[in-house]
Length: 120
Length: 112
Image (cartoon, one colour):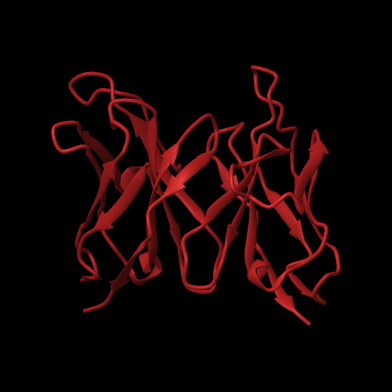
């Protein structure tokens, strides 16, 4: 059974970098694509980006153009995890962050979500 | 970017009655491979999203058959034949045909 679980700080200061990790069980992260999505309060779901693993972590990464300059997504096959780094955080980045398995233009498995608040 | 417009944004439905949500795309969602990667997700209060439908009309395992998806090109619909109390929550369409993938604004379903 495929399961995903986000972990990371619940509070980030403005201008700092958010680091979140998604631990995957039931399937290897060296297969498929793995993505991050967020849900800001009172708003709808927003894609952040996704990537695949292709040796030396050089697989293709696709990031939302609106966030691209601030986003980095990496995959650690030794721990069966993938991670998100989002730099220069502002209050507008406050949201519930979800990790998900991306399979053929769809998201078939999701984590439970991690609430991240940006505040000093 | 592809804009997905859902309507209505809010639904109040009597138990046992049908419900329908529209998702209209700003451009064709036919992928280069000929498939249409249009998905529907349900998000119950306090839970993470759950996929109900993929590639327009394919229902996920465990999803009740009262949920169905249809459509083509730029016009898609999620139907619930008989609404039950557990269907309360938000429903989102999402396209995975063109990058960046995008979601509709969401439709909130409540029981009347």
